[in-house]
Image (cartoon, rainbow, N blue to C red; front, side, top):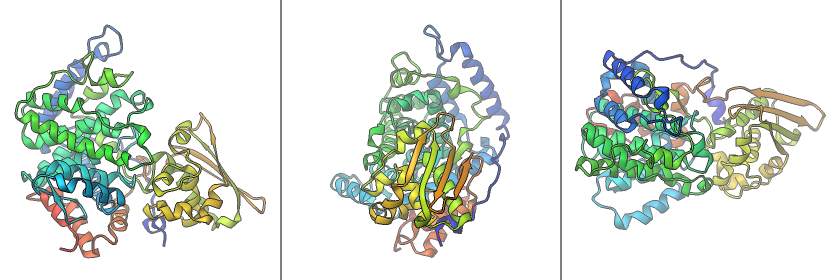
Length: 495
């Protein structure tokens, strides 16, 4: 039975505003808001920006596990669950095999495991490879406001570090949440301008999350955390030109390793500018034409961007998901087969064509950036998991024939998260489906059970069913772990 059917997706409403954090964090939020008044948010040529780097460093250093509201912790656990699943699932992809082969002769001491594999590497190379593994399928988590994939740079870094210097599950989850919060807030401050000029925002902002989370586990002081963020700012990585190639997954992997590098140096008092994010010649002004520093500092400790994280039901670029959702729904409702279809017309946002306009993909990676292929396989298979984006599926004559019948029309009135689909059948009938919010969005989130099913599908053939179940349970109970390194141990195959 196709993956999408087994999951039995439920349409649910997104959670509302989350409860405020502790009184200490609420007070911190008020102070942060005052520091980042509209007059100082970077909006004018002569405006003096707030001390964003230091405000953020203070928040990271002072926020503990008990300061996290229950819904924030819960989403942090779901983020971890999804990340481990996709990292295990991608662990034997050709891209990962090549990275392992390239780095094995030069790796340092065997300090950390690779998820789903038996090799061990030094923590920076392990973080890099796990980051690559978690992103290679384009199946990882997504913050829809910025299109950042938050977990890869952060979780890859701290799971590697936790095998070198053991930390409790609670401390691990706290660092994960703070790292994700850091990268998302920085991303909000520069998106979409930063992304539009060609930067891969997961890499460029992910390095901040990795540095923040690793530095938190190291117990950096506020001053050292300022330097860690500054050193992270000096290492932006990732260009959108890499999309559709192995290079794309390099970006979160490199961000993970670079963040560890920044934190390690800062722990030894390797200094940086105190204003590397906001300074006139700092990160935000150099890398983007938009700088809204309020996005970084407002309501720190009371509003959590990390609760807006989402998880993909489909193994491809997020902007294709509404079209896949529409195609699968029409297929299942009307019991459609490919040979019944005359043409498929889609009205989509311009970004959809810009990012996923490959009409004739030749390999599976390119298929992930082809709305034409994605719609075709959604009709044929009723699913869009990793198996539907294989090299063989992209080249299958039946897929190619239906792909050529897909017509994507740019409509600026359609939002990126929407699609208006009309399927014309050979008997003259027209079938219509409009998607306002696709499965996997904040409005229609994946349930815990659906995340487990996705995890199991990805781990199939890499771990036994018993190992998969044990790993899932370990992730769900991360807060009870004496050592977060148990996650990596549970992900070892053939033990």
